[in-house]
Amino acid sequence: MTRLRNLQNRTRRKTKEKMMMKVWSKLPSHEEKKKNRKFTRTWERAKLAATLDHVGSYIGSCWQLHWIAIQCLVSPQRNVSYSLLFVLGAERCNEAVQKLGKKYDIVVNIQGDEPLIEPEIIDGIVKALQRTWERAKLAATLDHVVVATDDERIADCCRQFGADVIMTAESCRNGAERCNEAVQKLRKKYDIVVNIQGDEPLIEPEIIDGIVQALQAAPDAVFSTAVTSLKPEDANDPNRVKCVVDNRGYAIYFSRGLIPFNKSGKVNQQFPYLLHLGIQSYDAKFLKIYSDLQPTPLQLEEDLEQLKVLENGYKMKVIKVDHDAHGVDTPEDVEKLESLMRERNLS
Image 1 (cartoon, rainbow, N blue to C red):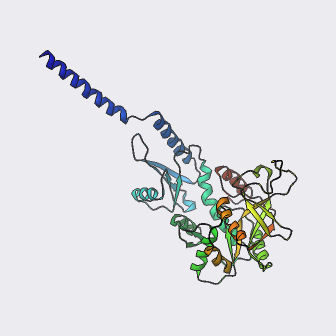
Image 2 (image 1 turned 180 degrees about the vertical axis):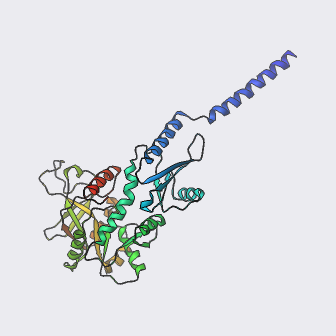
Image 3 (image 1 turned 90 degrees about the vertical axis):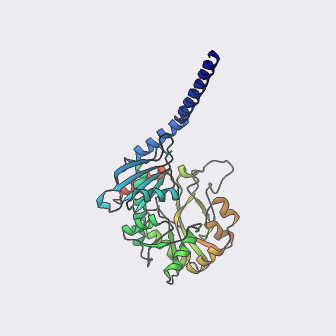
């Protein structure tokens, strides 16, 4: 009897230990707790965005946050609504929106482990896109301004503020290929096509007119673009593309690194380095050719579409302009951009 009782006690202890192990395995580890705190911090930052009237969380798991969706409704005067989704890919975003059971015009995908995300970034996305379109409409040389995108959510946003939208394929590798597809779908004949990046809300209409006129005046060129003076603090920033030109105003090279680069390895404060702006125009006939050209080594290495033009022996006209460039490439850029837009009454 004693031996049987001892065996039963050992069995109960083992069973209890197994149950305790199961319970403890469900509790969050230190890393999981740390991750969850990041998610919470990101959500708190999103709530500070000025354009969002309502932020609600949707959590998929007790300890591990497999997904979080934050529903955000924009103030009525903007007549736009948002759904802000954390740590979701495109497919997960779509599934989450469907489960919300409401219609949203924009879905913004923000990584949930970015607790320092600024609310201004959320607001700036929509403002920058709309203001860029409005500035482009002021250019005297443009007959038609459209937004080319492969994302229906962006398209819906643009339609809200009155833009014409052309849907393009996700397979477009760069702006030139997207422009070419958009022109084909417009089914109208154009001599010049201008590509303006959507994060250039401070672009002057005169710059747009300038690159169009430069291309018209250079029959040996198939492409034109604009540059401005590079600020010393941007010399080593790979998001600021640098350019060198010849004595006749044709592009020699574009790079994410500092060019020219002297043997001292330091920035020459006296040298007039050039910064490439996010705007270019193409000869409409060449645009068709460009899309058929194979990617080139320098283009792939620098990830710059302009280099495929130069590597294939085509000429590119460059004009120098006085412009305070503020494209949105990093979160820090948004704050600078918002400040400048307020100064110019564009916010």
